[in-house]
Image (cartoon, rainbow, N blue to C red):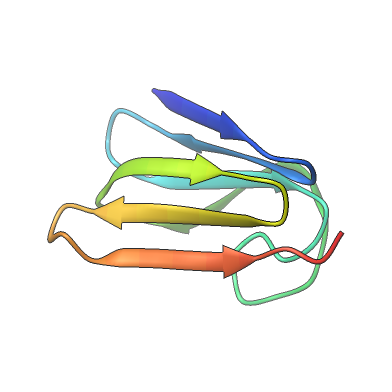
Length: 71
């Protein structure tokens, strides 16, 4: 498992490659809803980095995904 934390959210990659997030709105699940418990965001993720107001993930196919968090 790989975990990264920013100012408003935390993201974790489970051993099966699924990406989970929790924290303050804009978690990457297509809503602006905050979550106190992990929400599944996407699959096939190999790396994730959270920063102050955004997060970026790299998938197994090499594509780069980003989400912006308004905190």
